[in-house]
Length: 302
Image (cartoon, rainbow, N blue to C red; front, side, top):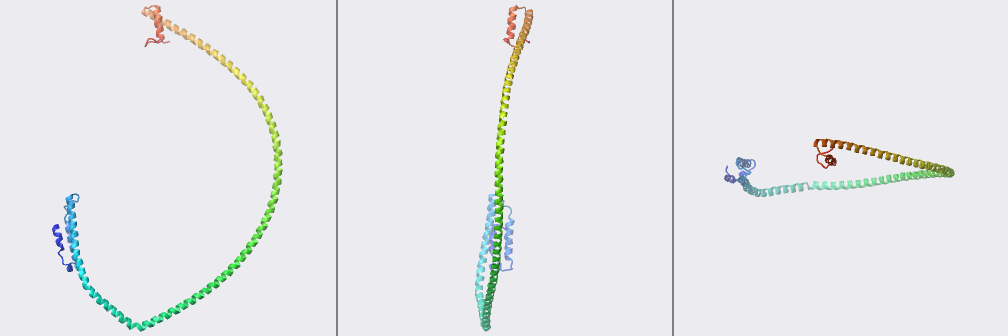
């Protein structure tokens, strides 16, 4: 069904189309859905495809509004015909209710009077019951008050006896504490005197020990000073002898090295003079220059 034909479905008769049970609404909905689902060649990813899909959806909305408008008009027409009927039915119901109430009024009036009497009797009974309940509550409250007064007097008596007992115990404890405090005071005085005597004795003994220790420390200090002087003199003598021995060894080593070097240089001059045929003065200068490192890549092995 082409899109141009979709709006032609608006050609309906509202009275028949919207008749309950006719199935016309379901049939038309099926036709419209079949039409929209039959077209599958539009690609929503392209501009043309999206435009075609939106156009088809717009035609569905247009058809919906056109058919709905006809339905609303048909509904208004039907409601206009129902209103007079509703007024007559309401008039009938109200008239019948009035006849029923007038017919039953004598019984209704008696029932209402009996109801009022029953309500008055119930109210009087409730008032009397409330009065009795209040009287009972008052008597119970008085009994509770008497019981509370008795318990309060018993508690006051017990508290008084307890207070007297505690006062006697406090007095007894105070006497015992006073006696104990006096005893402790006497003991502390004796202990203070004993500590004083012991401290004086300890001070004397400490002074004697310190004097003895001072004498001993002075003697040890003098002895240690003398020993230190002896150690220093002995050490100085050892260092002097060691220095003399070292100087002697160094001199011996220097003379030995000098002699050894002279021997090596003499042997070198002899070999050079023999091999080169040079005079002794030239060979001596050459060996001296080599020994002093003045000639590159040449040295004497000592």
